Image (cartoon, rainbow, N blue to C red; front, top):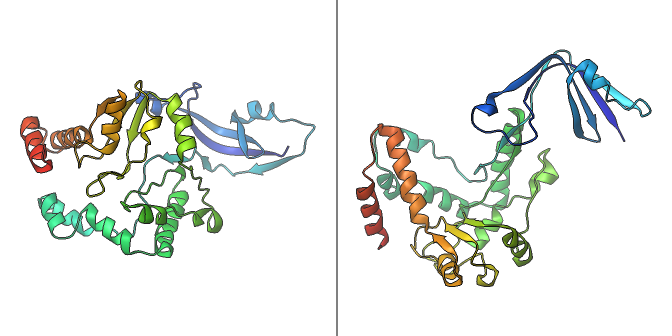
Amino acid sequence: MSQSLFINGNIFTPVDEGRPLSGPQQGRLRHYPQGALLVENGVLVAVGDRHGVEQQVVTSRPIDEIDVGGYCLVPGFVDPHTHMCFAARREAEFELRLAGTPYLEILEQGGGILSSVRQVATASEDELYEVTRTHAESALKTGTTTLEIKSGYGLDTENELKMLVDELNKKTKVKAEGFFLNNNSLEKSLKECKVLIHSTPIGMHPKINDTLIPKKLLTPDIAVLDIVYNPLKTSLLKDAKAVGCKTIPGVEMFINQAVVQFQLWTQKEAPVKIMRAVVMERLGG
């Protein structure tokens, strides 16, 4: 087993209580001005003051000692939600939004999220790879060592698969891991879950009969939320209700997300009933 001892580090690290931290606890840090790190086979096994960490070195095995010269050492950032695989930026819309242009008007002008969908549809795999590579390497340089990259702008199977840029592993220092979603892996996961949240565009109008979850894998003890809001009753929700699952339609997320945004931007209570009525009228509910 290889050992590496990093010494003379100005270390800031979260307080480790053996469980994920939340709320104000996330801001609790430990500071080791003369800190050290011990790594075995690429795994961090000890962090703290130099004397304490050195006590955990296995003296019978060779060790590489690296003096970091007083540089600051912090844990890598984790970004659990990115859409960095896309074809073109939309900064031009920021000025429109700041000027008060309604989002629906931006959509009518060819902008908005549908612009991203069109750009992905016309982009090649090489173009999508280059954009994603640039963003991933930029994230690494600024301290993000773990991140999630989702597809979603494809809207159909062909374009969604095109967005799964597996060349990152081969051509960059980014370690990209994929999860193969098939009936076997789904069945295993669904046996262990109580809440199923479908967060892809599969089943969105006009392909309203599409679904990722076979009906036979659903059981009555699972609560199912489908964030697709058009149609109001997706194939997944129909199947889930038929099986006996508790179901939550995507329009609830759509409306309540808008309510929170309204209150954050205006500091006023949102007209929830009016907002709901408008949405339901547009969606035929």
